Length: 257
Length: 246
Image (cartoon, rainbow over all chains, first blue to last red; front, side, top):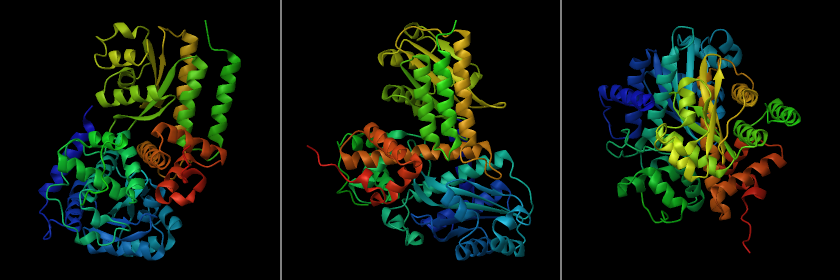
C-alpha cells in the first residue's frame, strides 16, 4: 500500500549517503549529488539533469555525474534532437536501448556522438508536474539492452526527487525561463520529502496551482513554489492551503519569496 | 435476466470505439467511459481509478462531481470497493452500503452521505497486471445480473484498451510509462481547471465542462488545449477571454 513513499524515502536516504557538493546549498550542487547517487543506485555509466524552458526548449545541463554526460547533453541542444529533448517535449520517458541500431535511425547525429563516447543506451525521464516541464533526468549506459523494471521504477522515483528539489528553491531561481538556476540559495533541508509534499495526485493542489498562475500572473512552477512557501511559512499541510486558495480565503499576491 | 438493452449496448460500444480511432485524448475518453457506463447501467454515477507506477490507485475520471469526490476519498483513505477490486482482481458488489460499515468503515458512511446505496467495482486488467478499477454507484440497493455484470466488465475492458492504445504504441514503451503519462495528463487537466475557473470566476468543474466542450467542438485533444492554455492563455482566446459577468 505504502510502497511509493517507501521507495522515495529509500532513494532519498541513498542520495544523502553521497557526499554533499562543495556548494551544497545551491540547486546545481544538490542535483549534482542526486546524479552521483543515481549512478550507484541505478548501476549506470553516467547520469545528468538538463533543464528546459516553458516551451520545452533546453536551457542547459545543470548537473552531471561525468564530463561525457554534459558533452552528450550539449550535443542534443545544439542539434535539437535526442532523448532528453524528446522526453521533455513528449512528456513521457524515452527509452533507447540500442544507440547503434534503432537509436541511430532515430537520432543519427546524436547517436554518432554517443558512440564516440562509448555510450550504447540512453534513458531519459521527464521532470514535470502536469503542464509544467522543468527538465529531464538522463541515464547513460555502455551496454545495449533495456532497463530492468525495478530500475525504471527507481529512475522515476529519482526524477521525482529532482522535481521536489527544483520546487524547493526560491521562485527567483526558477522564474520565467529558469535563468540563473545555478545560483539559487537553498532552503536548507527543503528537498527532504515531508508530509504533504504535494506530489501525489491531489486534485486540489493542482487546481490551486492553476488558479495562482492566473491570479499572480506567474508560470506554473512559480505558482507551486508560492503555494509551498505559504504552507511552509504557516506550517500547514499543502492541500489545506490549496483549499483556501480555491475558496478565495487567502491571498498570496503580497507574499514575498 | 439482463436489464441492459442490447440496442443501447451496441450504441455504447460503437460510440466508445469511435473515440478510439482518432488521435484521442485519454482523459476525455475515460470520462466518456464513465458517462456511458452510467447510461448503460442506468446507475447514478461512475468513476475510474488508475494505478500509478508504484501500484497506488489515483483518480482519473468520473461522470459527476459527487462521484469524483467519493473516488478521491477512496484514494485518500486507501479504502473502498475500487481498492478491494484492485487488490483482489475480482469484481466487487455491495448492494447494501448502509450495512457495510464493517467492510469499509470510512468509505461506506461517506458514500451513504453522498446519497448512494449500492456500489459495484470492475477490474481494469492488462494480461495478468491489474491497472485500475471502474466504479458504479446507485442511489437504490441494486444487484447486477450475471449478464449485466459481464457487459459492464466488457466496458471496463474497453477502457483498458484505450489506456494501452493511447497515441498508438510507441517504441519501447512499457505499461509503467503509459500509466505515468496518463497520470501526468490528469495533473495538467486539474491545473487548467484551476486557471480557467480563475479567469471566468466559476467552479473548477464548470471550467472542466468549458474546456471539454471547447476541445470537442474544435476536434482538439483535451490535454493539448489544457497545456496550451496554461503556457499561453492567448493561444485559445475564445476559451480564455473573460466573459463579462451580468
